Image (tube, rainbow, N blue to C red; front, side, top):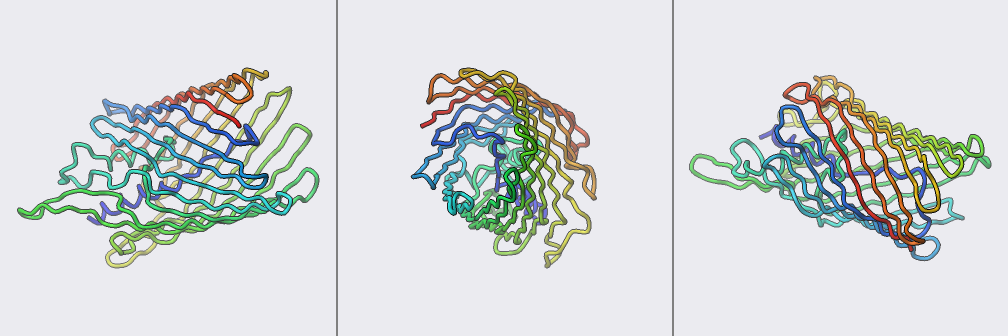
Length: 389
């Protein structure tokens, strides 16, 4: 049962998802953006692919000149053979207020618990093994596969933060910030098990640890049409509790992201290079929670490239390149991964209000699981729209 509790903990860690911000904003006003996204990954030795069909929804409301309200929500259907998870995600509502001549931003957010929790699944003797939602959720949470919705629900959450931009020179701005994420208890999984002739139901409360992070970065205009950006984030996690017992403490995380933009003739080339390092976790050992002997977190690296090759008032074409790599940890190669690929995308501006989007990507590589090295290949297709107002 202790090992099973750790599985629950690892899945719950993926819940705080930070979407990558676009290097070039699409609009300064309000907008509604949505569409249909299909992601499908084939795994060696598996007759069926891991598939997720999602409908990501982003709504931005400008309220006055200084305040923006953003709503994020993603219903999704995920399948892996006979395993299936369907339903809504949690709904995030963020408010951002600009102060001090737009040099200071205060943001607060609420994660409303609209998403699916109490996943079915569990140990080998669980009655729900014919649709082991919990087993599927472990695949969805893998960073290297980058599913649109890696975790469906995590209960009520709240976030608050502040960001300060300090102009140093005409072409150099330094940013400082911090935020605090408050998490509330929820029920991540429900399963039945047998003790003798008695059937019991397990539906225990999981309390993920709160977290605090600090950011530092700079934005530098090298020449008129070239810009670089560097951001660093340190995140501290409090211990997680399962049935009111401390069972896990996530390793503290350091992340650095380097961005580059070159613009020319209404076109641009942009790149982002992201590195994440997480220290040793704390695990429940006998009756105490203590640091593991070795670090089971491998170094993570991601590369995202965008080249806008065609640009006119109505139509734009983009070429994409992606690379995602996870290094071997100090225990073994389980979790090591490397995938790379690319694709293309198109934007069609129907009028001053409507834009139609299409993206197609193909990636392939290798994952290292308990079954050893496994080849994998995936497609990522998005068709959607953006309404600006």
